[in-house]
Image (tube, rainbow, N blue to C red; front, side, top):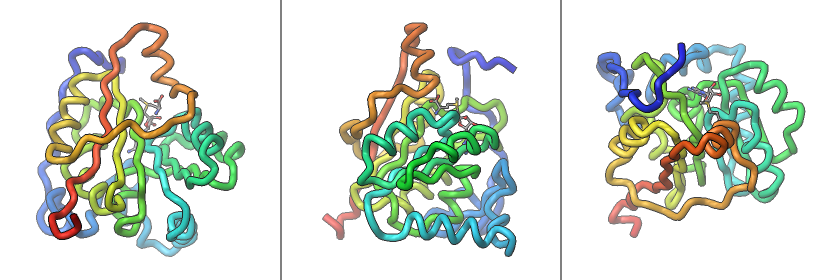
Length: 226
Ligand SMILES: C[S@@+](CC[C@H](N)C(=O)[O-])C[C@H]1O[C@@H](n2cnc3c(N)ncnc32)[C@H](O)[C@@H]1O
């Protein structure tokens, strides 16, 4: 179904469940029912190797950036080649895209077929990420497909290193407003350096003269860390 970007509104969210499943369980590992089986998938032995590969890639070392929803991988691959001193982990749910990008990925780049909500809630250790790019997230029509929720923001806060940033771009003003609300209280930062290549959606916006909203934010430092 074609989505009207001008009139898009946040869909009704499913009621949060109680206890550890609830979105508001900030700080603890949140269980999510993601598009590809959700966070409980990684409790199963057959997925242990993927979990180990992810943990090895994000282990302490060079700075770590994550791109959410890399689609055809234009920006993920361009950033990985332009900034070889960084590690670039990308997540995307469309299998064919992931397979194609994986074939072209340099050593500092790990493209994965994974729901970003599962990655951030269940797989990444605390304070391991320097930067998260969310470029043109999908303006979904069902609440249970929403990427950015209060719970997702709590997960991002948990996995970011002190000073780490979240950078987003969108051509959907309603989504920008929603994300701004979810991230309220975070501090504004300068847009991080990027390879010159535009993402697929960014090219469309440039070609059609569509407005684009963006933000780069970092969690407010805890007073005891200042
Ligand atoms: C609107 S497209 C934008 C693609 C690209 N970032 C760009 O700027 O052109 C959103 C992408 O996010 C992917 N996606 C949606 N929900 C996701 C999720 N929960 N985890 C990972 N990728 C997701 C979609 O499959 C799609 O490729």
